[in-house]
Image (tube, rainbow, N blue to C red):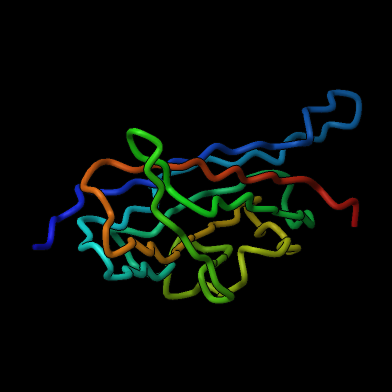
Length: 160
């Protein structure tokens, strides 16, 4: 017998390391989340992958700061989603699960590995768009329930 697992959400928190510096006129960088990574209903034992280009299920974030400034972005990615009663649901992130662009169009994204730091430049308007996918790996005996985890994104200017 197979049970559907209710919608799974991967919540996130975002940290901008650089604080405003009134003396230099610098600010940011800051990041905001617009959409959680969502795997939807799952079947026990059946992996479910979400592409960063998925327009309704991938995580979506925006970084803003100084125009054309170089930034370093680090994702702290969880190994599992946590459920009620200590139940875990394994997660996996791979080399093509991240995307970034200086435009909001997913079609213009450049794929990257979110497991390693991304160093790139903000756009001419000071914006950078990020997308995140991944794979949920429910076990064959996975219990039905709601599962969640937190992703932390750390963004800092590199000084270059």
